[in-house]
Length: 177
Ligand SMILES: Cc1cc2nc3c(=O)[nH]c(=O)nc-3n(C[C@H](O)[C@H](O)[C@H](O)COP(=O)(O)O)c2cc1C
Image 1 (tube, rainbow, N blue to C red):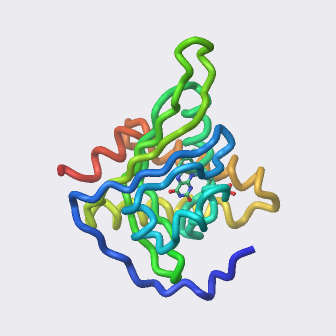
Image 2: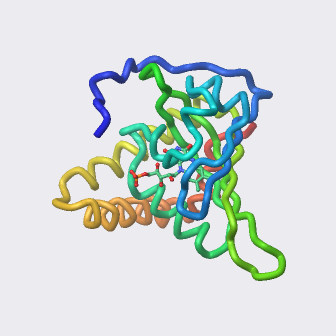
């Protein structure tokens, strides 16, 4: 279990043109990260390889968003989402992430996933933070992680239904960039 008290609350900035890339096994174990990803996250490639991608998970990320991500990927579809990640030094950074299944053309089997993350508009991050806070609150009162996911997904669906959007549409509605 990581120690959340080591979070600094400081955002690590990176330039708009920077793309942070990582690749995983079908179960989310990191098998590649580009130098930009390593640099912003504050880890060497050697420290990342073979580790579950949850090693950079930030506690401000609701379980519901990752649940939706995995459901989308398992259907063979790409996923877009606003994600806040934790750096090795306890800082954090926001991204607009795209996660894509890499499918073997012969067997149709997913052989890996890759993610490209871009600079995220601070206004969009603020709005995502507000919604994620609501999801975290819904998840926090539940007794088990499984129940927390159900409650978080329901809270997310309620928000999206009111907005008349899918999660992906909502993400793109947050920023005009
Ligand atoms: C290609 C790929 C990239 C991912 N990138 C991130 C990421 O940047 N940050 C993150 O917290 N989880 C990321 N995940 C999701 C993690 O695998 C994991 O589901 C998530 O951190 C929640 O972990 P937990 O259920 O153990 O709390 C990624 C998964 C895949 C397949």
